[in-house]
Length: 379
View 1: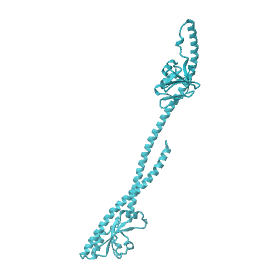
View 2 (view 1 turned 135 degrees about the vertical axis):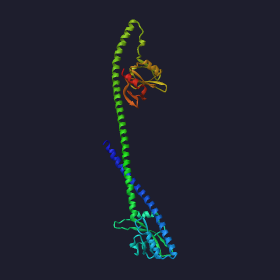
View 3 (view 1 turned 180 degrees about the horizontal axis):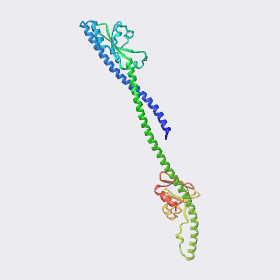
């Protein structure tokens, strides 16, 4: 698979983060669900215990025999020990008077004797959850339960006991966790597939963009290679052409002198008049490296690096130069073909010229003049 390392790394990182977050989420959601269940069961058990306590107390106050009252209670609670909360009735000695499992009636509940003095009048669902979550359920404990509330029956020595069925509650708690774990596993797989899709799309787009940039870069490098090759050929051709032109000019001058014609003034300039300090100094055209404008002053730089000033503007100087030998790179600088050492890419569409000697300012050919510069080299 393409980019399999990326997918493997993504899977590992995502799985670690997601499992950690999912574990916390399952614990929190399952806790809130079981607390809500316990709150409902506590309220329901509390109401049932109060009803039995008040009805039984009223019956005893009305001189109804205690045995008849106990039978009525037994009938109302019989067989409900499988519920999350169930009730029983004991006397003050701890003897079971009524119990959902009738076989326990008449026995003494040691658990009841141990906890009667410790049971709170009202227990919160949060406290009950803490107890349930820390309880160790033994496999052979078939009737695990715990007393959570005691309500005395008025006019008697009887107590209504509210039990929590630990096995039922813990089973439901585990079911909640299993259900939410399953949901988070399915959700995680879906998210993982979506993340894979996004990564695949982004990686494909990224690599396609890299390929396009690489292609553009290769094209630019090829174009620069061609441009530098054109520069080298052009410089050689110019040198050959200058030799021919020099010979032709000598012949024309000889003919002009013989015939008396004034054609010398039509020939291209051979020198430019410059100043160094207050001294007038002629500079040969072929010795010029580049000419530039700075702070309204025109500077002429020779191949040996010496700099002179000129009174003429760049426009005036450029109009008197041979366009085959000089190129107006921009408004600030004119460069000689002999001074160009290398052409490199600058920005997206511009070119930068490196000269010998190095220019004091950057020689940048903008994208608007790049095409004319290329045509100039192909002359």
